[in-house]
Amino acid sequence: MSQETLSANTAKPLIHMGRSHYGDGRDWFLEHQFGLFIHWGLYAIEGWQEQDIWRRDRKREEYADLMKRFSPRSFDPDAWLDLAESIGMKYLCFTAKHLEGFCLWDTKYSSFKSTNTPFGRDILAEIAEACHRRNFPLCLYYSIVDLHHPAYPHCGRRWEYASSPEGDRPDKENYMAYLKLQVEELCTKYGTIHGFWWDANPAEWEDATINAKIRELQPGIVINNRGFDSGDFGTPERDWDVEDESTQVFDQPVEACQSLGSQSWGYRFGEDYYTDKHLIRSIARVRAKGGNYLLNTGPNADGQLGLEDTRILGAIGKWMRSCGEAFEQTLPCSGLTVNPDIVMTRRGNILYVILYREPTIRSVPLKPIDCLPMSAVLLNTGAEVDCRLDLLPWDHTEETAYLRIYNLPLNVLNQSVPVIRLEFNEDFARQANGGLLEER
Image (cartoon, rainbow, N blue to C red; front, side, top):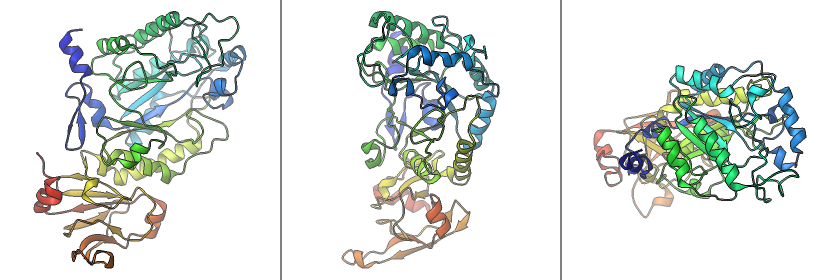
């Protein structure tokens, strides 16, 4: 790899008009913005939480016996991609190896793999073939912690055993050699890999050569920040990041990750799911601020997505089909209003007003915007909505009438995430908020 290529692939992105740009092959990631995350492994056989082997200190030998029952006869990656595309998702991230250490590809470096099960097939090879055939970018998840490998040095940190099990030979150098061989295998056997999604590095090991090798083998790949260096993008998780909530525009590439289930990422029997509205609000908030969103589900032991997962994804897809234009080739512009309960995007002289928080009043104040749009449409229904310039009592000292949206239907206001498209004249697009909306 030349020094010029290395520099280009590790350079920090530029920020222009509220959007990040790498200026190289990684820009596919910033253009796609909405992806499907798939967590799948042996834990699906019993419907356990994907970290049960660690959380419940399950014996390694007993857990490994699940491998004898791995036979997902309904596994069909095209069905997963069909669903993803129907929702508006544009790339896939798949768990090649989770904490349990079970490899869903035909690795040469472990016998703990899908090809040594009754199913006998290379899961990743079939997923990669489907993605490549359909031009659907593929990213791979890889857990640094490995609860099966005898060389991984457990020290009781999060995601680890309290200490290495009896009979293990803990050796960081040995384990890292194994990890590097598997990473090279993943980056050379399955065609173009668009992203590498590291997870679980409680020891905070650092080694910039690993990501450099990945970039050498897969030009244009994006790498997250949970591996051995800072990577290319941040990964706020499950709406826990306070900064994610408070910022109006992300100042670096971000891919927020969230699962349909509140307790798990893989298939779990008796899962407590998030509400449809909570998930849609989360998607709207992140994407309106310029971030990517990676939404996760987990197939069951047979390889199929559960009925509730499919229903929730269908509801999100329905909302995306009516309101998704607010996130396509738009720029963040929430700074145009002081209303903290909405986010906004824009495309030229069109503004999209997104009510991502639970409304407390029936109108939508857009202070300090003080001119009327030429049209106002509720994308959820396609109906026109009322707009007025009102001088309200709270604004009496300013003597200015500000824009408000009125009379949104209660069934949308209370049961969904309303998105209103406001089309203004060109003068507004040039002048609003000191020229923020003007392309430059």
